[in-house]
Amino acid sequence: MSRNCTLRPLKPCLGHQLELEIRELDASRFGDLEALFGTNDSANRCWCTWFVIAVKEYHANGSFGNRERFCSMMATSKVPMGLLAYLKGEPVGWCAVGPRSRFARATKTPTLKGVDHAEDDTVWFVPCFFVRGYWWRARVSPRLLQGAVGLAENHQATAIEGFPLTAGRRHTSDTQVGLETVFRACGFRLVRQPSPGRVVMRLDLKSQ
Image (tube, rainbow, N blue to C red; front, top):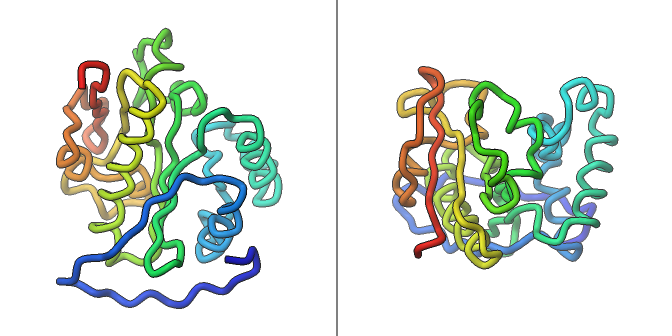
């Protein structure tokens, strides 16, 4: 898929199994990620740097600067920046995942207060998802999360965590962090609930 491609509008297909492919992001798939983010102003502005860099830097960078920061991290990282979901050859979803140390700003938020920073390189973290179209989230996000668990296992992570919304809080502006029900269905356990709307969840991998 070329970097300047135009993605077709998605239509809901409730009641049908989606034949999704989950692939690691690499240089050959960067154009697909760019096309996917181009379908949404917030995603195109963020470039998955919100939980990585300081808020001041994030806003000063703008879309172009955040994209460049993402590209720089991608070029130097020894592990993938995340996973893409494809439906019939087109990118429909994205999941950021990697060692918790990558997401420096996230580890300093009140939600993750008290984490053991000695684990930051061995515990992986899933801070956000982006899926095209409201109707696709319930099917695409779980598959991306399953893929993230597999990727973490392949890179010898001892555990993988997330900080999704609690059940019943999906109608907020923070749905990119995922939903508690999706994490629970994938085997994650509740670690703590730092606020009424958020939980920290973890899946230990070392003994699996």
